Image (tube, rainbow, N blue to C red):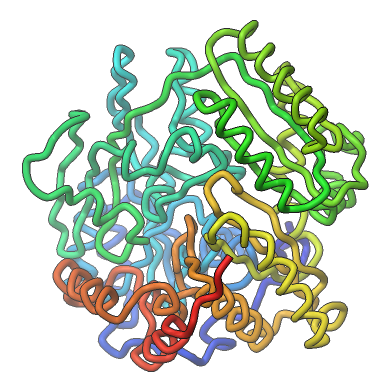
Length: 524
């Protein structure tokens, strides 16, 4: 990547220059040399990255989001190594009214992990310590900056794995996963993080350290404060430590790629899988012809240039995984299930992968879809919505039809791609743009979030609201809920320094969203 590139494209304009819906909060102080000096007094020199002392590329690593939608001109990036250092940073920033953006792997798909104006970035990059692992029960306590893949690599020797899996596993960090309540491709098997996270260590805005790194599976003594911070997107406090119940590895894995003629048949196949393989089905991901084609065009299949495992001319595909403990039994179940679905004409054709190389090859067609799409335009608009299962693909069809009617395809946007977690009722809608134009993004956002609200869905299934979706929170949540969310925010962060401009809509946006949300819902 050159000094001013993101995925081969010029870095997007500063958010503060291209987005006029928010103004810098006057409560917040502009950083001074004295502030920098304080940070250098509590952190090693290499852990204080000043804008003017690093390259544009290094700065963009922290200040620009992965989709090249948002970018800030933050003056300093801090890389604390301990919880105590985080505590000192936040206490100082709270006293001085310096706004802070907590950051993990910066893989956010909603602009939640980068500043909007000149907020400082406090990254967990240097906090990667495994604090404790119980090989008997699989309980893990670790720093919030541990990379998801690194945790799996550590756990595999004892036969365990993190109960979360994402295509960004090589870059995302567990603290960020928790802060957005990430679900991933195997939530069908693992459930969400509210269930697997046993406790958290969190630094509050005033520097107070909440140490609740319990490993008790059952503890009903008082409020479960951990659940306030899971999914709070760094707006209440800074997660520094995690206690999580890991999952035993199931070695007998079968990965299917099957072709279907319609999304109705995808739903039918899902019903069959849940009914006939209830104990072992772990993932059920949908692709269509266009998503398969974009991976092929960009050469992101594994191995590069290899053909799709079955014919690539069908309307829909499912990547499904089952995982059990007995290889002979699981292989027999998988073979029988595939044979039955083919005989009943639910599947048009299908194949099964069993070796690690074959499994990696099959999964590459799903895992690398986002990476392939972002290579096709200077910026990409990404949606992460949840809907009733029969409606999941209709949003793709309707958005494509609307975009054609509005004259957007071929002029402002390249295409509309839909793929994702059928097993969780969660669809990813990704739209690569031909131009970096904020008005185009807002026009598309208005359509998609209104459509989602009118069909009784949620605008954020697992990526959080961040900055991008904040105006649309009230499309999903009522005024009463948002008012109580603000009370919680004000209780923990009365000075508003933690990840400002994120999550919450303005009052005007909230009133508009309430009207949209209350409009008649469309049935299935």
